[in-house]
Image (cartoon, rainbow, N blue to C red; front, top):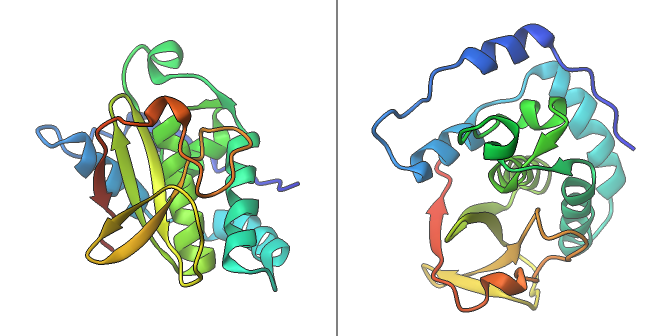
Length: 183
């Protein structure tokens, strides 16, 4: 179990934060949220226990532990159901609010994998769905995409109890666009 204290002043600030790219694409917005740093308090309360939990694990086992955490630690609800409009979360907001959806979980998972495993992550944008894919240094089998001659394994933080390399069956055959996270 991971327990974190959330800064309520920061949550109030985020709730009034203007949409970062008024005329940009969803892709730009997701990258903006994924690149936002966590507070030092949140880093120590979230990263330290998770880093301890994955210490000594293979990349595959560590990524599976992290994805299971993100899949099961939060209840799912779409933004339309919760807010009445599309509203991506900063990682800390996902830990604060009672519900999250696919882009919130993908943003959090991307941050965890990049910070704790040091691996490159991209977003996978399917029609009506966002997931992630990770470029592992280990040879891992499963559903994947190839970008710049590198294999990125599908890691879907909304597909409950799916391990890395498992694409949501409803996304099979769908067009998918990769979205790089730049920082």
